[in-house]
Image 1: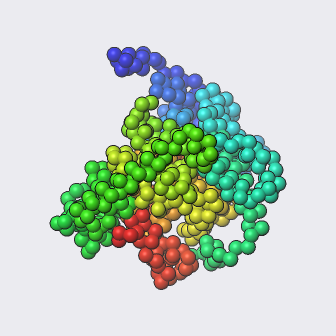
Image 2: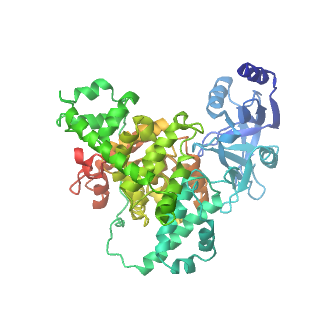
Image 3: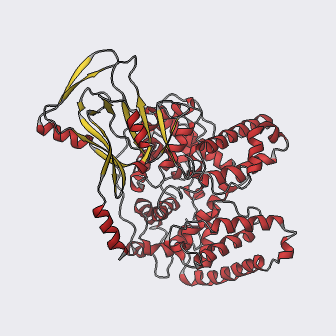
Amino acid sequence: MADNLDSMVRSIVPEKVVLLVQDAAAKLAEDSTSYVPGVLSITEKSSGVFITWRPSEDPDGSWVMTSDDGNTEMVHSRSPEEKKDQGVKAAFSLDVNDLSSFRIDEPKRGVGFPMIRLICRDGSSQVPLYFRNSSTSAFVDTLQGYITLRRSHRDPNLILVVDQKSEALAKSVSMLDENGDILSRFMQNPYMTAMTGFSKITSFVQDQVIPSVLNDTDAVSQEEKIRLMRELRLAEEQMRVHSDAAGEFEVVTQLELPPRPEIYRESPVAQQTWDSCKLSDGSFDPKKLHYLKMNIFRGGLNAELRKEAWKFLLGYRQWNENDLMFEKRRAKLAQEYMHMKQQWMSITEDQEKRFSKFVKRKSLVEKDVARTDRTVPFFQGDDNTNLKLLHNVLMTYVMYNFDLGYVQGMSDFASPLLFVMKDEIDTFWCFVGLMEATHKNFEKDQAFIKLQLNQLRDLVMIVNPKLANYLESHQSDDMYFCFRWVLVWFKREFSFLDTCKLWEVLWSGQPCPRFLLLVCVAILDSQTNVIIDNQFGLTEILKHVNDLSMHLKLDEILTAAEAIFHQLSASQNKLPSHICQYLNIGESAVSSACSSPSKSNN
């Protein structure tokens, strides 16, 4: 009944054109003098508010365009066939909620026409539109009736679409900002606050930066936290002598890399392929193990196979372990789990009064569980038993690894495991295996995160020196805007099911130990033109990177990342030695097993 009523309402609510800009011409290419006259409109529809551009229907339409140097050119409509072909390429219609930002270039010295270029959340941009008979103010004023806009303080020609829920930046750093008083003191006087004890610097990253990259926060706050982290890092480096030069980039001339090969993704590994690599006792044929892992890397796993396969990929079950051996060991591990679970469950309220670290970690777990993946049906509902299982797994891990305990973001790693395993004990031991590979991401000094970001910077320098130089000139070469990507392995960037596929690809350990970083490089490489052409500063880069969340196409990114790997591998004789180490190629190659969650099973 409700669906029928909704359909009826949609059918009777008329569309309303709230703005119509005649003679808005689309420029077909940056280096072209070809324009297509058209009409720009903002329209209210039952499904949302849409910005639309269509080519003009006037077959004789023509008007004069004036270039910056004062020269003029007549823009003529083409033949009906050519106009239709060009119009199809340039026409667009987008929901205002998919808009990330837009540029406005006003004519210089009164010569020419104002131009607007729309940039979408997925990183794409529409063709530039030139206004002949009107200014851009009516467009901006109308748009502000539906979305919140803010002019970039770095580039007055760039208008940012502000997420009202989180004031702008978002989905990168925040669900956990519970120590605002400490943060405010850092903001007021970071140097003096830091000098009260450098132990607070490492706590700042764990207590402030990680929360802020995992939750919604406004653009200004996010940029301030990242800038402060940079200041603290520099202050710390000045007071400490570092003998370890790992991660420093050796100066090399710009390399000419060969073309990237054409790469194709393959179908997910099916039960038949999986079983064909097994021996009769349930263990795996060591001669077929590399073949199997390469197939997982190239296509992931069928969903129904994950419950069994993830146990192997995460080291819960050994590849050479037969069914009987695993069942015996699994029973022993189940007893061990129940023993640790009973430890935290038996702590009384009176004991908690003298056990502050435990209480803090318990509180963090409870807060995180209450907000982890609640839009996923498996975790929806106030009385969802799966939330209780997730809570149990994380609390038991606190007892398993009390030195590390619980840090915000760990629940992001645990929830997909529970979704796949549907079993508390199996989930826990898979989580232990995954944390073996990722626990350094959550250590207080954040040294491993910084190392990975340095390695990412090094790779970008080789793969895309144009972007690397731009980031350096805009104080963004520390790559902190990729912090969330590395921290939780893109969990906040892809859908829940795409995350499962990405992770099993990474767990395969193929084709190199740092393939996660090549995924980062592939995404940044695809966004180069948007970042540079729009002259994004740190705030705009942060916003743009965050806006890519849930708009990234996983298979395209994996294909690009693999192509970059082969491109670099073909140039291994020219690459710096540490780049070869990241990629496990050349004379400096190290076993990829050293970085795989299943390292003990290869």
